[in-house]
Length: 230
Image: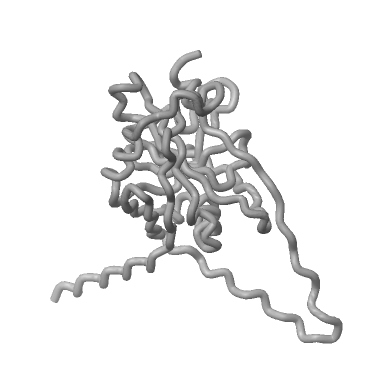
């Protein structure tokens, strides 16, 4: 099996369901549904880890479903107190500068957020470049909370209509704008000699990195238009 197929096969996840509310009481004036506020084109999220801070810029303009999904977990603080547990090296393990780190949310018995519809890179126009954040998945439309951040260009993770089998890749939805030094530090941490099964063996951190908090930040104010020429 080639390295491209190994990389595609290496990122996994599960799925689930939600509840809905009933109709308004009889004879009561119909309640207006709350207006859904559209996401700004760019959303900033600060992730504080035990190894340092990572600032993410999520691209809601091109990957709105994926960004909204990630923000649901942020809003209910499901990432707080969890971990970045994986560091996959692309190439010789002792020399690799490319690859990815992977983290996850907490499953604590609360209502499970349903999986998000897959947004392939051929649809969004986003690519797996250095510092891209993307969703791990098993089958298409099964991504929930497991995310990964790439180090170096990883085109094998993009959708490829010419490839055989599942060729839809992974759903890139943003990038690291500050803290790539932290990402590289995590990627270089020692790997467990025993943890992991199958292709995951040799990719599990000996001591997972704790995600302390993950918070959405206020959107940066739009820059005023320059004055018209006189």
